[in-house]
Image (cartoon, rainbow, N blue to C red):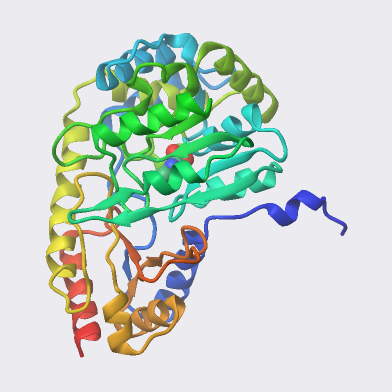
Length: 397
Ligand SMILES: Cc1ncc(COP(=O)(O)O)c(C=O)c1O
């Protein structure tokens, strides 16, 4: 078969391949401790399930408007305004089948072939895939290890901006590093975007997954609403990854274009699911708080054990459900030269399955340290404790 040329530029999310490897290992009768995928093993709150069931019974099973059910768009705009201090209306909100489609639709709407797009590396791998698939030039920017977390390397970021740079992809509450920009850094990013006339994708998939403090959105800074598209998702906050529901929150003209892309791609997002999401936003937020409380306990447990391992350096982030320890010394001590040697040996010897930095983009030329990612959203505390204790023994042997 002679495929289209663009197919060679299509990337993927290799974390799913790590999951498949772990599944094979488990099928061979081995115990697996799953830290590889950012999925939740917590159920979707009951009120959301009930509302979606009722919507099915009420016949919300046909097509709905391309941009989503109006009541949901309205309530989501209000919710976003309350959390972010913005002034969006329903015309800014275009419902999507998940947060992920916002990435491709943002790029398709604003990027011409040959335009340069800045994106985080390590970062969510779909950015690079969608930029390259659509004929853009993917320009990675990086983060530095600070004293209590990862920091944006803003000087390097600015140096990467050229006349061809059109878009900036910014994932605050970052996957995989759990990095979060300070108010000062947000201001500097906004200044850069305005100065160089960049449109910004604010991937805020983890905006509400936080254990202390308050999230702030780049889109709320003066002059930014006009140039930002927020990626919003119901996946993480409401434990709804498999329901597939999210939204693009964009300037009105752009929102209309994204709605037109919806009509071309999927007609509309799943109709009755939107009524479940509406209940999630309007009912009591106790179920959401319970999800965050459970994740906080897992974060504490994961941090406690990982940071006690000789040769492993780990930060304790206030957001996301990821830990991204520096394992350079541990790998050196064990004599592992490559990430895959380390990852596969750890799986074989301990059953602990995790992704490495390479699942979040290629290593950058000046990168010396080694990092791996532990997602604690899909594993309960007793299993975390058992698995990570085995990993500690393996690394310290
Ligand atoms: C940074 C980031 N953005 C977007 C997404 C997409 O999430 P979804 O499509 O499930 O809403 C994810 C999922 O893991 C993510 O980590």
